[in-house]
Image 1 (cartoon, rainbow, N blue to C red):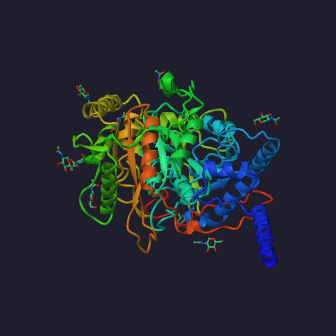
Image 2: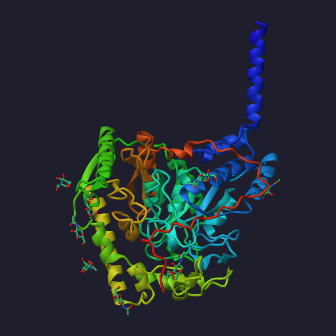
Length: 553
Ligand SMILES: *[C@@H]1O[C@H](CO)[C@@H](O)[C@H](O)[C@H]1NC(C)=O
Ligand SMILES: *[C@@H]1O[C@H](CO)[C@@H](O)[C@H](O)[C@H]1NC(C)=O
Ligand SMILES: *[C@@H]1O[C@H](CO)[C@@H](O)[C@H](O)[C@H]1NC(C)=O
Ligand SMILES: *[C@@H]1O[C@H](CO)[C@@H](O)[C@H](O)[C@H]1NC(C)=O
Ligand SMILES: *[C@@H]1O[C@H](CO)[C@@H](O)[C@H](O)[C@H]1NC(C)=O
Ligand SMILES: *[C@@H]1O[C@H](CO)[C@@H](O)[C@H](O)[C@H]1NC(C)=O
Ligand SMILES: *[C@@H]1O[C@H](CO)[C@@H](O)[C@H](O)[C@H]1NC(C)=O
Ligand SMILES: *[C@@H]1O[C@H](CO)[C@@H](O)[C@H](O)[C@H]1NC(C)=O
Ligand SMILES: *[C@@H]1O[C@H](CO)[C@@H](O)[C@H](O)[C@H]1NC(C)=O
């Protein structure tokens, strides 16, 4: 009896000690799990932030996802701890550690687009979305690598090097927001941000078993983001769960109408100040009608394509078993390759928009003053040889240096985009579908060293401004390179302003399938040091693949 009570006392004692010293477990953490730890007194904000910094410090060399850490992250955490101590912890993202794609303007760190010539380009104002995050209590941990200037999907840049897929070190993480995707998948933060000109919020979600939303164009202002295209560009969150995507979207959309981005004037009054997380659990999958875009699949069997088709076929069978009606859509206009070739307008809009961004008087630090100057900027390599910082292998970028929105082809393409948008709405109406589904990428995310991220289907939403929620759909079979398989993602596309409805559908599919798994190495516990200051991380630029030649002179 005596022994028994001693045992209980000893156990309780050990537990009490453990509770005190137990570091916050950052692995797969959510907004809710951070708040639970803080509000139940298990962790301080400094501990929460330190636990993510420790993961980045220990593991960034496995993904090369981070360009810079925010030197103020721990100071901000301490301020939030003071608020917590005085019972004044407010804000939907109170002490939630996040990472920003390095094309979001930040006053605390340079905004580089991953480009050496912009290494010191220093905004003196935060982008409105960054202001909204800070106001909501988020802690900005740092900036993530991206495909240079967000111009392709393989996530390699002259400043940040090649980002590596955490599920398969021989593959890219998708892109262009690939640093964010790899970082979120590795639990380097609770969620991160991306931008999407053609695929870039969806391809990294798909390749890293994550969720994202490409919001209806106009829902979130694009001010303070390094631009490419007025017609294509949107910004949004990437997270490990639909709920966190919804919480993040609510904050990002809260900045509302912005006279500096006239697309925000299109938001209907009925969807201002929506809490996108509030309605996730209402309704069910039963009775939904989902269109299946057959033209966005590649049914030619191969090692890279078949796993995607298998994952989608399994997923669709599960949906039908839940009472979803799938409607095949076989119209030949839905051919992503053909749409992109005929209607993409980046080449006409890029130079004018970029010049407006780079010429702003509020942009401090050393930086080129025009796009053409950026493209002729020379840097010096380790052995003193000079190279152009931007490789010029992208035809559309080379065209952008001379093209403009006054080109007659531009106006013709804009008419083609209006036609496509009406055809898409007609597909929704005539088939009476709630949403349209297809794989984000017809094949597995490409290997490192590939010249482009081929097979992606992002162009339809990119041109029509329609919203898309991306969810994990499955994995390929495990292999030596990919110990738990390569992630595969599905797009759920809706009508303009159906963002809330799509998140509801995505949430129910997520709960039904529970596809997401963390990368194998990211399951390790990382010891959390008592930081005096935020550690520094140096991107690895030593292994830039030769398929991404730094511009030779
Ligand atoms: C990454 O860094 C850790 C700790 O510094 C080291 O043990 C490991 O070998 C490194 N891994 C790679 C792939 O460089
Ligand atoms: C509570 O927090 C808010 C927002 O951070 C701040 O503006 C306010 O001054 C704080 N109030 C107190 C009593 O600390
Ligand atoms: C909207 O903004 C774009 C980019 O600044 C500009 O080119 C366009 O003329 C504006 N449209 C209207 C109707 O003001
Ligand atoms: C379809 O897949 C096959 C086999 O993987 C590949 O050769 C072909 O290029 C793909 N086609 C398209 C349009 O992606
Ligand atoms: C649509 O395409 C699918 C797959 O390619 C095919 O199985 C189906 O028969 C087609 N439906 C119609 C009505 O053509
Ligand atoms: C899609 O468009 C491309 C480019 O125009 C063409 O080569 C291809 O045959 C088309 N695919 C189908 C299935 O029609
Ligand atoms: C540096 O640049 C020179 C001139 O372009 C080139 O010959 C040399 O191979 C480069 N060295 C490295 C280490 O990249
Ligand atoms: C107009 O655009 C077309 C198609 O991209 C391009 O070939 C042409 O050079 C452009 N012309 C001018 C004057 O910008
Ligand atoms: C757009 O549709 C109109 C009316 O159907 C047609 O006359 C025009 O040729 C189409 N334009 C393009 C660029 O597709």
